[in-house]
Image (cartoon, rainbow, N blue to C red):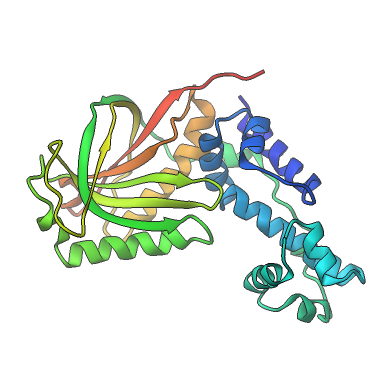
Length: 295
């Protein structure tokens, strides 16, 4: 499957249908992906979640029309799918820094407003050398600390590191009862693909039924087949960027050339003794299924 063609097809469709109702499910079907796999690939390749991209393109179209036409603000807002002018005004100001009326009185329109996303072949080729192994992991149970965040406007990229910093500085792992080993998991689950919300848990594996202390959460996950990737060795300073680069490579380089797609329920990073040395590494676990070729 040519990922570039598939994703670009959906970008073109978005552009041509900004005035219509657009759902992630119909975009995923157009790309011939499962909804979750499309959601994840789109985010890593384009740089933002699918529906956030749709929202920003609608706001961009609104900005162009404010400059190039005499249409009423309310008419532009309703035509582009905003039910209320107040919600449109808030979204517009958040995106552009000024109200629609202030924007209309501006003396120029940035050329970048007219530019939609276009994917180059390099978006899906090249990159770091990456080794993968398939691992069948038995069902497991986790006790840990929960953060609700979103992959919108980089929110999760700011909140998750702070969450880890708080966890480590306060030695919160010591409060997890009877862990099976010393490994810590950074786990993402409960994705809402429309809003970009998901749950991030820092925790450790425990026996089923282990009592849960107040303030912590207990979650169980079934047996699955995982594609496991190991990040390059990196100094503490470069460790976060090496992890993020590996995630990008997995979704923009490895998946397009593989016969697999994301299974759609969770992903996690495994932090073990390799994180204690000067050169740090982790493993990234992504549940996968064989891709079904759609007609």
